[in-house]
Image 1: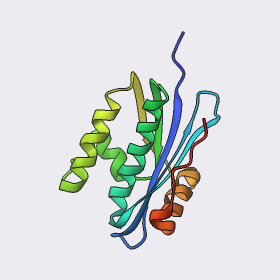
Image 2: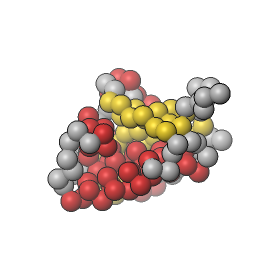
Image 3: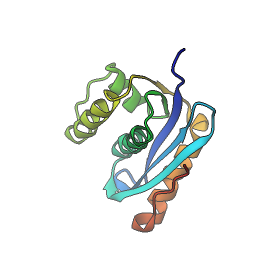
Image 4: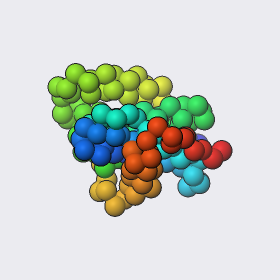
Length: 145
């Protein structure tokens, strides 16, 4: 019997690029139920690309905590997706740090897929990331088990 895939939508936001940043992620189980919603404030001077990677990292961390072994990842950041797939090189030193963390996390899954989606197909993660960037350091992590 094939292992069922969970679904992760991840996003990042920066108000000003760089500016106040936020990360968002929504993790769905193999039945389509929301298992975690993450909305994290990232700091006052974050670029959009850094925020995108941190949204992905937050979602991957939670998926691993929940014991997920097979994961489909959807992001509206074409850059991050293509870097993870090896289509684009990671030239920015700050992004390289996040890229290494992402690849180390992905290696812990039995299987994963990552794909770029249009922004309108990533609304929930986008809203969580934007909310965190706007709220600032008072934002808290929200989760459902």
